[in-house]
Image (cartoon, rainbow, N blue to C red; front, top):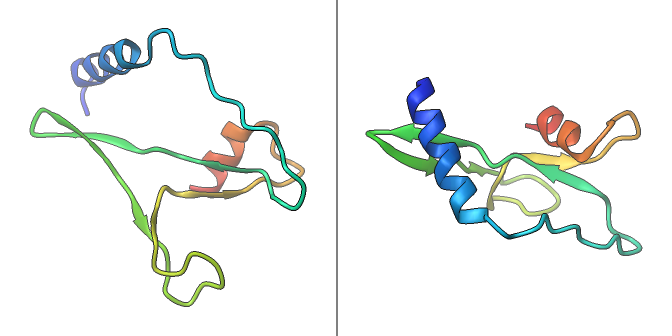
Length: 87
């Protein structure tokens, strides 16, 4: 994606999200904190969202389509760091 495409995508996202505060979900017991990356790419002038297909042999969510990401580790400084490390 070139700089112009990135600026255009940023403006579109800012317009779409204007007035919507970040959503912070409460932590519920028994659940693990996790972060995901929502990878965007520009192809033929259009924005696309990329997904991964989880391996069939995994114990949880096998074969499902998902965003790349995973569970938070104690050394992660933020949920953004978790998402980037896991992706």
